[in-house]
Image (cartoon, rainbow, N blue to C red):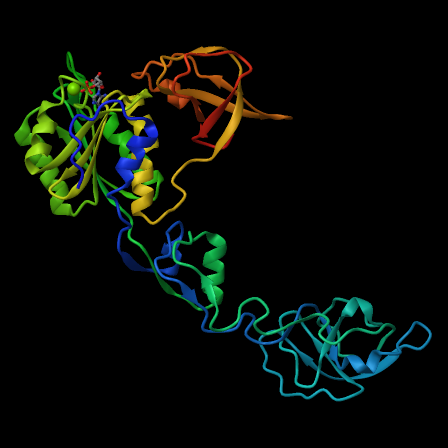
Length: 419
Ligand code: AMP
Ligand code: MG
């Protein structure tokens, strides 16, 4: 629980630290393997089998005993008697003795007795037509070492080994590995359920016709999309009028659904936040902050009936940038991630910029050039103009205390998309 009412002038880092401090990782839940993509492992994975499970051939070729080839040369090739044919999927019982060989396909088990394979290209039977009848003998004109072209059992993973640690993020390659190990179900961190509330008497649903003085609730959609893009689950709580009863009713819907976090927009700037503030003060605790950040100076953080609560500013760009900087990290932490920040690169500013001394997040396009990245701001930086974000692929960070940045200066770019 934090008790931080009206803390003024926090740095972005101080505010972020305070937002993250009370949040803990959500409990685990079992999921079927295909549903684990993008999720965070909640418990280590221990292999029950060897990978590969048995010694097998890495080539189409012949299996035999390496000692038979020690003196094989072009002039005096070794001749081996071919006593069988082993396809992938078969379980050979044929036993290899000195002077004998079997034809073997990639992935087929090495028969007992054999200790090496030679690719078919390196024999006198240099063909790839698997329908061709089995030759009676083959000739090989070079030695091979024991173990050549054999994938040993457990060569990739040994039974009993810890394959993945808790906290590992499941990507397609992890899905493939877990499938190879026969893990059809696994424990991952539960996805955060995030209640999204828009507040303001001026807001109407996007399905209704515009009316004088009203605007459409765009934040509700933008924040829900930001939540979904992180792999968390947005729950729209609709629009709350500027009345305490309505805010309570909408938040109650979230509590009934079991949300892990509330995110609201608007009503946190000075003189306008009384309704949300009153509700939160009565039922939980709240810190109304002014963060030394542009856009996004006002930010509320606390809890409502025990559920963490982040109050974003109302202006659409401010709401999205504040989400990027604070809510994103909060949701990722709850989901079990440890990398809470976006990729950041250094980019050369193409035009001079002014700032007011707060840490500023400039909407920009960052592109890659031969010797690094260059950044061009996307025009007007007014925080009500969403097009500045639509045109951008990055937020350029002008550090705190800096009021003028000359063209050619290097700035950190917080990448929203690939440069
Ligand atoms: P406020 O924080 O209530 O002072 O709102 C700041 C600005 O954001 C005002 O211009 C609001 O109309 C606008 N705004 C607030 N909520 C939303 C929303 N859900 N969608 C779009 N704009 C909003
Ligand atoms: Mg308002």
